[in-house]
Length: 138
Image 1 (cartoon, rainbow, N blue to C red):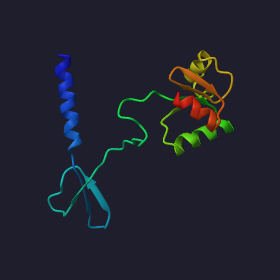
Image 2 (cartoon, rainbow, N blue to C red):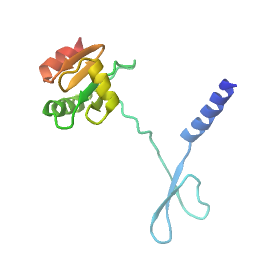
Image 3 (spheres, rainbow, N blue to C red):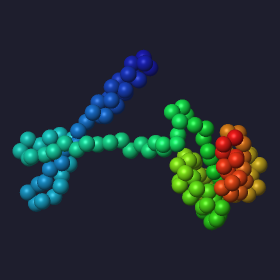
Image 4 (cartoon, one colour):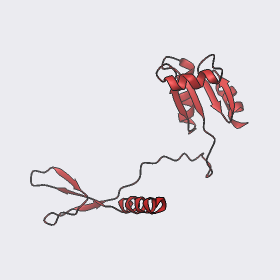
C-alpha cells in the first residue's frame, strides 16, 4: 500500500514538472499568467527553470556538511560567511543566540567562542583564511 501511495505521489509530482506557464497581456495592458492557455488571447509559453543552485566546486557525490555556529554581531563570523560565499563553499549557519537547538548542539560540541565551524567530525573555533584552508582540506 505504501508503494502505491509513493508511486501516485511521484506521478503527481512529475506531471507538475512538465507544466507550462503562459503569459499574455490583457485589454488594460497588464501582464497575466496562467497554467492554462487562454483560448481568446495570444499567449506565449514561458520556459520555467528550477531554482536549484549547484556550486561548480561541489563533487557529484554528496559532500560533508560544513556547519557554522555564530552570532549576528561577530566580526569573525561575518568574515567566514564572506569567504564561504566568495569560494562557493556550501554551509549552514546557525545563530546560537536566536536558535536554542543550535545553542544546545554548540554546547555539546564544547563551544567556547564563535564562530565554531564543524566539518567531518572536526571543529575549529575562530576564523582565519589560512587556518580554515588547512582545516577544510584535511
